[in-house]
Image (cartoon, rainbow, N blue to C red; front, side):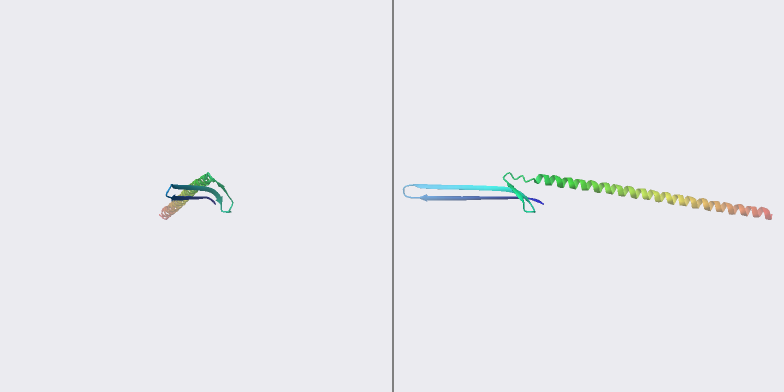
Length: 124
């Protein structure tokens, strides 16, 4: 885990003195800032530019997020294709079974009707 540490400090002081013959005043102002980068293991580099490699971490995070989103989309598409394929296979199997049952029933009815016709002809 990378983090950036920045600290700044400023100080200001002024003094004035007066006497009967002369008057003087002085003021001083100083400021300093420093930035450094480090990691969670306690090792870090301190530099005054404040770079610290934070840009690389952002790029890596963005790339990981994009890759994860693409993988999720691919998985969803594959699952949808598999479900549709299974549904098509099930529908085809059901249609084939229904057709076979209808053919068998029609054949049985035809056989029974022919048998009845033969019996009627023989009896008469």
